[in-house]
Length: 165
Image (cartoon, rainbow, N blue to C red):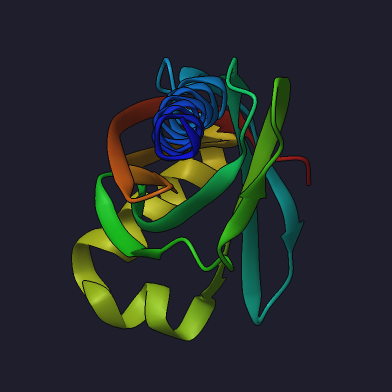
């Protein structure tokens, strides 16, 4: 009889452990990948003789009960169809069950801007100044990582920015 009670207790403990593991893995699991909504708010933050600073925001919604991390280092920035650089940002912490914005900012050295294509770009920049507008494009991939899963979001957004002189 004592052997039977010990056997039943062990059997119950195994069932309880399995049930607990199932409960933990399903309640904290990533049920849906975070939703990429859009790139918004592309703007020229600062323009002086040394640098141009461009800023935008990537809007997301995370429906999961767990957060994660976003990496924006795969996002290129083009000005007037010329590659100016890659967004510089630290890995971004994603909140659980919430909408959030990821800042995408790039500083462009005006010397680098002119050295990329001295003839065509200078003409393009002069044309942009005369027309008081720049065509800015953010293009690339943003990666979301959580609990061993990785989701990639291709992005492409072009906007014409007005230059205020």
